[in-house]
Length: 241
Image: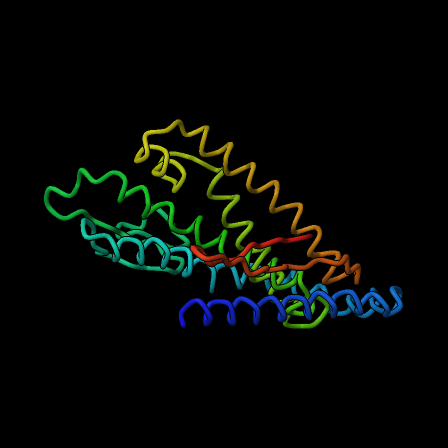
């Protein structure tokens, strides 16, 4: 019964994404000049809204990633949570968001747990970016529609900036610095790894921009194929961008 249910679910998703790919392909039949002109309308407003969205929505999400990871850890607890721009207690330093996490007793030696707490926003940014890119690339959300453009900026541009900035600007006390010290790896290695991921993200951003604001819809799809035999059951995933 369980195997049958899994196969049904997999086939459902397979059909869903195949239909999305067909819709993406058919969208190319619209005259390119008309699509491009329509896509450019109002573009400036999306760019203008970026700072407000970053400070008002994504920074709280970033700090919430730290707080959630700290809450999940049995060795740490959240003692102060301020996911908004503010000065510290004596007014000597300005933060666009902060969260204080303290260890509990002998658990202060848990460096891996601390490293995961500082790594959490990177994971959040990556998941947001990848999910948004997949939804737009497969035409599940139409890139030139208002929801598609909002998803492009909110789910791709802003997470990419947050990830890149915090990975490459690895000054003392930054998330990248804490990740390096807790996992006992060189700080430069965190910066190089972050820059590499950021470069791939930049390529996907350009591709997404062409879709959302220039009307260039290159066919992309996600194909999930059920795999089953007498001992195992699963699925193979194939993506084309």
